[in-house]
Image (tube, rainbow, N blue to C red; front, top):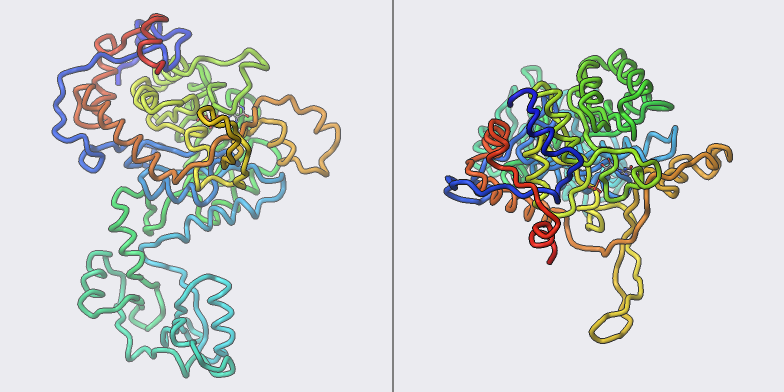
Length: 497
Ligand code: XMP
């Protein structure tokens, strides 16, 4: 993409998504089907995702369930740090849950020894939720497999070795194997589990038919080198952030997101330094910033992606309470102009309709982070509450299911994070920069993601491109050809229905 673009910077000054349309171009896309259009993009410098969508690290948006959907659909979810300070385990549990959802090769399968009682095997299966245990000797050599079925209707006093399928009756593979070859072998031999061993018989891992099926069902999924779903985890810039980062990395987090309201700051500088010193090359996202200066500041400190957005968020009150912020389109253009293609930008906040996703990606975002767009979904954390609502047509009160969506700087979120036992002075010092609202409960985030992707493909078609990256390239090489600045009446014509 081109460097400094004074005309575009001038054009977008003080503007956000609803200030623009794009001029339709000659369409060259044969099919607008998301399965056929390349929507891949960089989430961070070294992590490419096949769909440019990210779920926000907010405690009413992303925990394991949401992160799994996003990763399966080709994006990524960031587990929030909205747990009490010092209370790291809950976030670790969420990260670990995502990493255990699917595998390529399970390199750390749950094991048991043949000399143990069947009762112990049952207990371990219940504890881990796993239906097959690899049976190994004291040297880690595979001696058999024991499954739930083997344990039905038998006394728990018996020994695992008496009920397991022994090694000589198992199909095993010596050495590593590609998933395609494993699938072929497992189909041929009609087995659901394929243990891998080395030449000495030591267990290396297990491939399961279920995981292979998952890989087929989610061809665009964001996976790590071991075939597990990718997930990010947010940390702060002070307090427990180093310890939190260490624990979530140990649990398998692929990306650490240092997320603070004002990322162009001294405390961010110290945090990046601290994280780099301790964790070396971990993939590091930092934010939020909204200016060229802020973006350059983070680029120079060696982060791998920048989160852009000060105040556009649906749960956000920063602009109301402080009067600081930059309209999101101007913020994106400023930051893109400042860092070019050196590292990716995550356009964070302000997406209220699907068209703004295309706009965020064209004006500079490599991916788009969404909070309120997913609010109320099945996969968001929090209870569904029934509220009485007056139905306009019948004038009757009907019970409607709602869920809470709140900004991470809302009084309730901050109070929960600090803990009720927190220092009263700290509680009094909370200057709320977020709001809390009830939103109607709705279906799965998966359906919402699918709709967004279809609309993005249509935008690519209108933009005269065949892929997301081609659209972005064409836009930045000649923005004037695309950008239509709206007047108040044309804004009404465009967006008010
Ligand atoms: P959307 O518009 O998708 O935005 O809901 C999600 C982003 O909003 C930011 N966020 C906040 N900003 N006060 C703020 O100023 C808050 O309390 C707050 N909570 C979330 C955050 O960047 C998120 O990704």
